Amino acid sequence: MVIVIATIGFFGYRFIYGDPNVISKSDAEVYAYLVDEKHYSPAEIASIETGYNFKNEKRTAYITVVTFRDEPGHNYEFVYSEKNGVWGIGDVEGGGKHGE
Image 1 (cartoon, rainbow, N blue to C red):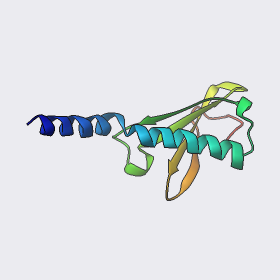
Image 2: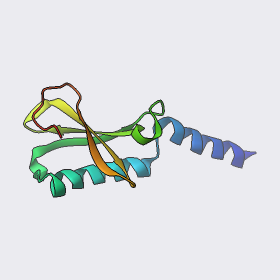
Image 3: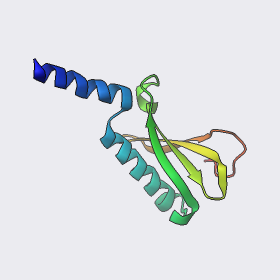
Image 4: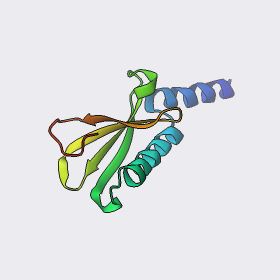
């Protein structure tokens, strides 16, 4: 009985809050994409944070939000998948200069 409750709790947590391993992987892959492919310096990136929303379709359930130091008021959304890599969704507020 305890094993059943623990298993339900484990999968319930992941369903609501997302898989911590996927969140970490998304953060790392988006960072690598920005630095290696888009040639941003690490100093230009203010923050990278991946969130999970179980209400989104599977391929966009994990969205990574990036803020650049020169535009602290703009957030840019990216999605990572092992199959497709990283792609930018765009500037959440609109009008930013770091769009894809």
